[in-house]
Amino acid sequence: MAGADDAAPLSAVIVAAGSSRRMGFDKILTPLGGEPLIRHTVRAFEQCAAVRGIVIVCARDRDADVRAALADARKIAAIVPGGEARQESVWNGLEALADSSAEFVAVHDAARPLVTPALIARCLDAAIAHGAAAAAEPATDTLQRADEAGCCAGVVEREGLWRMQTPQIFRLAELRRAMEAVRTAGVNVTDETSALRRLGGGVFLVENSDWNFKVTFPRDVAVAEFILQSRAAASLT
Image: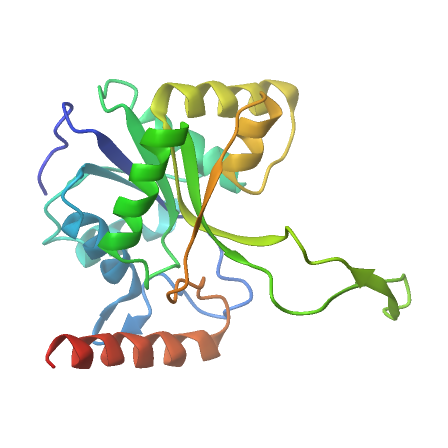
């Protein structure tokens, strides 16, 4: 595994420390197109020229398996243990970059194996222009708020609503400051944009019309495999 180039414009923290509770089995290592799912995710970052170093954050009991799955990866700088919550895992990843001189950092869910080098590059361009950027998709479904009994209580206006994705890219120093602030305040956040916005920072949304869902349920594996096969076939035409 190659070390990170500290002069690189972009480092990446790939978070793979979830419990896979809804999946029923370890989704990070589940076979996808003949390879562990996490290998597809890492490959996209390795194929993005701007990325020079990647930190993997995984559960302690999966460390050996993750290392084996990524044995041929070229840009892994470190594999570090995750925390009990996502923000703790992200913080551990940022700590592994403490000595890095990279200006920007991308945080990405390992369970999004359909991310592409092109999307990573678009998010980086937007982060350079705006300070921070995140992949996202406009909400198109009708949204209903439910009452305590589980019945429809009213439509939520979807105009201006977006479904957040990753990668989310920030200036490294600013994200460290934002994540440290939520740690100090004891506030839980579900993504890094929320931490930055608590300090008044803005995040530009990069509209993504390609597949980039988070593998959450067993059915998602079959869909992801079909999409990967379709992309491979399209590249041969």
